[in-house]
Image 1 (spheres, each protein chain N blue to C red):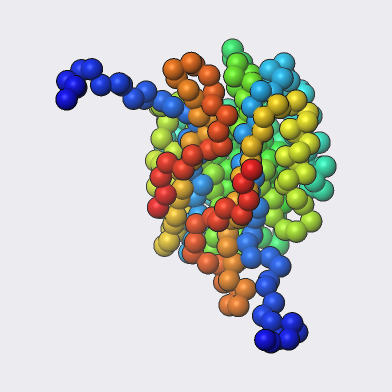
Image 2 (image 1 turned 180 degrees about the vertical axis):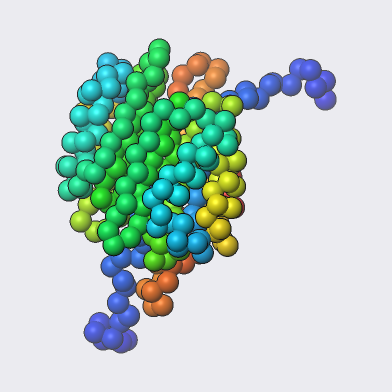
Length: 145
Length: 145
């Protein structure tokens, strides 16, 4: 058996971005239909995970529903709400190691008062660190709950 | 064998949104690092699939890379480029039946001159049409290439 010191080290970062697809069910519909609150929580969610906000745009639809995106130095957060179903589809895409999109997920779950939330975390832009090239693979599913 | 007329009809729409996660490899790096061109192509991609643009925000990073989002009445298109790897991660999220995100995918693949492109199409916000309630399921993978 080879000593531990001889084992091949697993690279710490094997992808360019982490992308959480979150499904928030049974949310407070009054929050989901309030564009000011949705924007405030999305901006706070970016800051909570350590991201740097560079731009944002939000839109209130008639008769209901909010869409919005926060561009961060580390990629973006996006949301679409269906207050009539108490449902929000949220994407949390971050690059680098300093931001953890899971922190934003937990923050929004609480702020939307979601009684049932699910997420899947995908890795985007898979890297081959042995050649420093990007692999031509589709995303990989790293975690699902 | 029951006559066809007695067969249970499959609902045409069983989800609120279609979400294509696209990985564009071997793109033209000069396009991927040009914020005006990336913005122009993303806006055109929205129009090509029949979407209505309601807002947009784009950002050029130093030393390279562009992030941008186009909010459409039918959800959003998002992009993050890594010109140094000839790679772009693109999300095409549309609601309703009138827009097909696959049209935007094919359009961008050509404009970015991607020699190798992959996509996965997910369904978000799965609906139970028998009760008109939203199902508490994570997304489903409908198509992958």
